[in-house]
Length: 189
Length: 102
Image 1 (cartoon, each protein chain N blue to C red):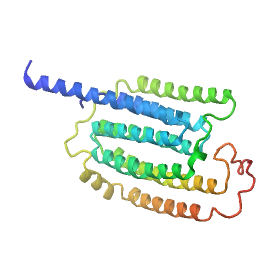
Image 2 (spheres, chains in turn red, brown):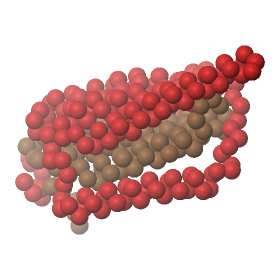
Image 3 (cartoon, each protein chain N blue to C red):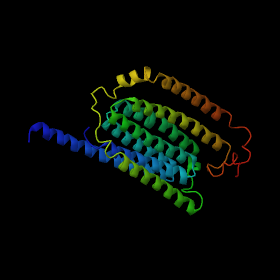
Image 4 (tube, rainbow over the protein chains, first blue to last red):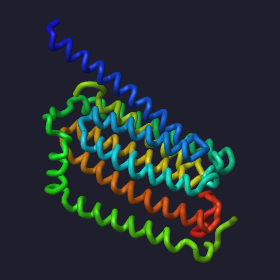
């Protein structure tokens, strides 16, 4: 066997190994997020989930999205979550599952039915068509390429995103500032 | 592309989405409902980026970045609501917030 073939197959095995580790970390931390009682541990599990997703984005040659994922999500958004969890203290420890057991069973049945549907559709409908993937050059997913797309083809989405972020910032300030007045009516205590 | 096919990524994305949906359905703490929503959005992001790589076009990554910005806005508003609920000394329980029930 010539040397380049051996190197290529070794790299393939290596990529598979990294993918398997990242995928199982992703699935495990996802389940951990929804099963912890303490929201602090749930937030920490979500940070692990986001980090393993960033590894998978790197395998898909989306370097800029992976960096943004770690900086924006695992950095800023999760710090916000942890601050609110710390602010709430032990009041944030909520009951594990709500309602009678048939509701929980129905939710589990609905979620697993959804997953089975996704797998069946992906397996049946796409088996032949998704086998030839496009060749990409090394500039794919680089910040230059992302910036070019954002400022040419997707300029409207870019501007609307800034308006959405501004509206969310104003909404957050208003929700935080005017919440000391009268208690909400119509709420069962 | 070295490593797994796009189909494997799609299966992981589907599982993530269903995990998040299950969390939204069975948990009552609004904080954990928000975390589960993040998991659902990330499952959608993974599918978008897998398809972007598969078709060799960057538009899927643009979509994923936009989804990230929308998720950040959603978290800001959701956490603001949770803080407002907590300041009014109400229970942090999504089943008890029934003002809008018809």
